[in-house]
Image 1 (cartoon, rainbow, N blue to C red):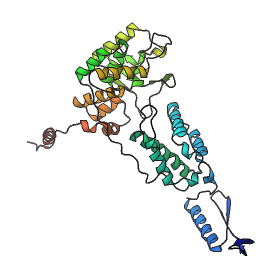
Image 2: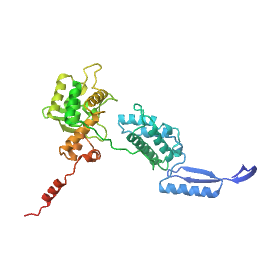
Image 3: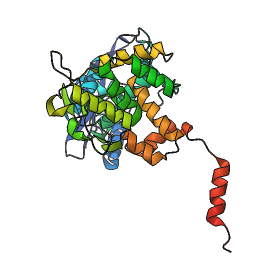
Image 4: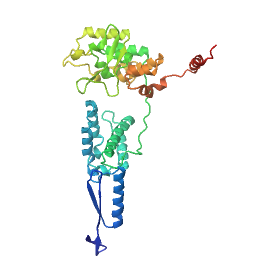
Amino acid sequence: EPKQVKRNGKIKEVRRWQARYYDADGKEHAKNFERKTDADNWERAQRASVRAGTHVDPAAGQETFGKYVARWLANKRRLRETTRTNYESIIDSRYKPLAGRQMRGIRTADIQELVNQWMRLSGKASKEPLNASTVVYTYRILKGIFRSAVDDAVIGRNPCVNVELPEVLPTPLLLPTNQQLWEIHDLLAEHWRAPVLLMATCGPRIGEALGLCDDRVEWDDDMARIDQQWNERLGRLAPLKRGTRGRSVPVPGFTMDALKATRKARSTGPDGILFWSDRLPHRPWGQSGLRTALANAGNEVGIPELDPHDLRHLCASALIRAGEDVTTVAYILGHATPNVTLHTYAHLWERDDSRVRARLEGAFKRPS
């Protein structure tokens, strides 16, 4: 239909051309153009995308990132409470610059700028930029959100492509020797000794250790069942973290003696929790207290910043040095697959060419 427009001070009559098409759901879409060629090209492109199954409703991309990510998180029904809380914290803090942006307007350059901003941000405690592994973890969640948006036909392509991320370098571990471990044990308050020995000799995570209950210990057979954890954020026992296997692990005699002494000296908590405080308010001994006590004892023996998770690494390295295979180590640590174990500890398995040669010769020796 004719339309009068003013160009270069002159009134000129132009015609508008309307292109129309129907999407896969039968919904009609239309757009006006001043040139018939533009209208034809747009219509052909949209019809082709419908046939190819890649069509994106132009109006869908107008939804803001904040609204879409809220909908995305609400649909994640299988997320554990701790994971959901963690996602909510990341969305509220690190994705905030995207909250008011339309989904269709977010480009790769915007994502790169956001990643660069994370690397410049200061952590709450350290006053230093977020470490590389945290940046990569935060980015991977964001990439998954946009991948879902593509699947939902909200946007046509994922902007999280060709984004430069910081290199995550392996952190060298400074683990205590056997002598240092026992020196640390003796420096700790009595109630911390049993959980520290448990983590060092059986490999549970700190939450798994503090969540150990009376009925999970086979007191006469020196075995412990690791199939739950104490979740401080929720204030109760909870399932193991996703990707972790429950397992029954052998307990060394001196560690079992420490567990029995704890059981005898103190009353257990609800559900028979072994490491339960007798002080008010009654609750399991806190992770923060254990971390502080362990770090202080580590400093005393020359192992700075010793963390409970380092005791888990200590257990793994001891098993590997003793000649245990990757399947056994993966089971003791509760890894979902041996691949997880190899990713972290492959460098600890030393290759013995002479032993391999002898075994191959024995396996393929010509029969006499």
